[in-house]
Length: 80
Length: 292
Image (cartoon, chains in turn yellow, brown):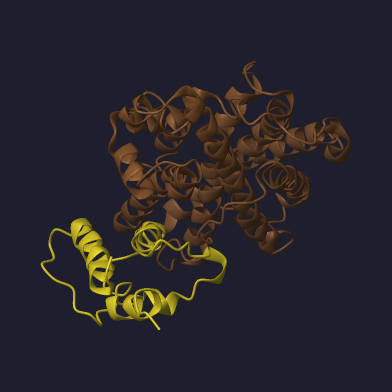
């Protein structure tokens, strides 16, 4: 899975839960716009894990890494 | 949780229940560190939890697996279930400890001591089981902010509703597995002991939630009560879905673990299991008016 494929999977997952939305801006705040809330957050983590193949430790999560699609891309889909 | 005119009957009843449950907690007191027996290992090929309680039971996913695979899956599902207990208990201990002997909690504080002591012991034996036989405790999303900011009364109500929903969820499994003769004695024992204590905690939780809801209902408008009901409904679904952990399916060797979770969550068997697990809880919450 390429870097772009990975973030596309995340974007598509969010859009599938919000049929009223056609697109999500890369810097749009996912929490403030309620695209992701505390009860759907765990599913978002699983979606990212599935796309990257690496387990995310809930105990060391930094919420800033999940604030927007661009933040998710930087934290989980950018190769060094 | 302050007194208000017209609710003396409820408060008398609460006091009576607290007395009864505190006495029973003293009478039933046990030492879990001595009571439980821990074999060095448990057979990998046994049923680790009742097959009917596993998330794949009766589903198309299960139809594609051998009995050996289903038994292996039951091991990881049981570890996930006990891990949920560990994390749920830690969250509720934080919330109860935050409130014990503070203003408004003068009455229940005496029972809180039993509650905190017993819950700490439950957390110990569930963690011991996971670490001894599985080598890990599955991590879970921390409690964090699970509801939009609320006024103090509503926040406390939602805290104790969350605790009650969690306790009723796990007790459904505990009570059935405690009686399941297909399961190993050690598995049955931890479920039996937990069920014995949780029965008291649930009775207490229902009384406390009832009183807290009376306080909220007296001062809330219809919009706030609708929002509370919607949140509780979502929280019940969220709790139930935590049983469907893709990390479990991965560890059991299933392909596409997230796809398995999605298939299972969308299956008719899931709806039936959720209905059966929360039958009593839903009836109680509807009777109080919390679910509308």
